Image (cartoon, rainbow, N blue to C red):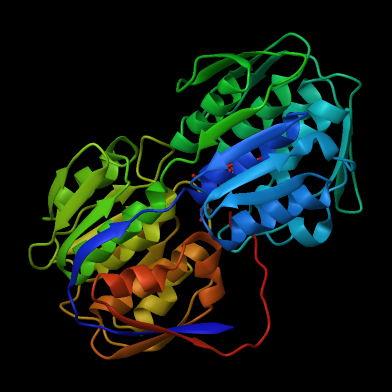
Length: 430
Ligand code: EPU
């Protein structure tokens, strides 16, 4: 396990390049399995979750080769297995995305069920129900989902509007692309990563209407063609750096960031007192003193993203007043608050709400990251805390943030990594 050591108190200044999106890359990698030929993906981030998914494609028989530092060529004409190895699925629940494409293209798949998760109970029942509605025979036994269908049949799938699912929307769209007839997904998620996947499928020859709406209509085709696409910038990484500047103070410009993916977050940061200016592919944040408290409630896109709830919690911990956060997506996403409390934050959790009374300062303490976004929150807290904070569990950050300590160092933060080389931990996060 590596540790990240941060000496707090230095405001951030400068420019930072935003990498390709983790949650945008995973659906495209899975979609490449639908194609009996080559897919080229640009702007692939070098993060562990993406590398696990590439390993998964290789384990299924696809050829994957980096033809430039961030450009991956995948040839899925050589896929020779429909069984996803448990060792890879347990590392990352996003790997369940291979189920839809395998089932649709090969008529069968065997994918271990991802199991529990540190940020809350994260079942895959919507995915499985959707496969059944598309005509698959599905059996869940010994922790493995086995699905079969000579050819999936298009139909209308109603997702529960009270809990839209990014993952199920993606998996069912992938499955429907090669199905017979038309599939209509009602109450589909509209996260930018879902839309990017729809655009990728359309570019590969899928017949999709209703892109970026809650009703997506997919007329299945016999085959998809070779295709090339660039992964969209990571809006959660971008948001994390904006929060870092708003919390630690300073003047930071994000390069390669999409404003349209962050409108709600930018509005929250403006209300917290930050000065924000934007251009076609950049966002600049200038912090002005201690932030003001802003209440938030997490919601599916275009609402406030649950993946930035922990970073907002840190801003709230030093704000000039009391903030109420309501988490509506995951039932255990306050696990970072105990560690933040050890750094001097005043936080009370009542059901799905966190009531955070802002303090003038936080103090360094040894803390532990328990998931990727909790890890990011602890880094932000340590940037503003008095003294030197040691954050263990740095491997969680490597799952979703490309070189976070290098990027923060480039902005002037005093941050180093110390390798302790002891063991690897696997917890589902993505
Ligand atoms: N849900 C079910 N049954 C299902 C699927 C989802 O009950 O079959 C519930 C979940 O338990 C949750 C809600 O529906 O309460 C929404 O879950 P969703 O399916 O949208 O989440 P996901 O697809 O598993 C993705 C991201 C998460 C992000 C969420 C919400 C990927 C690989 N992961 O997860 O990212 O928090 O959407 O936006 O895209 C992260 O990057 O750190 C991360 C956790």
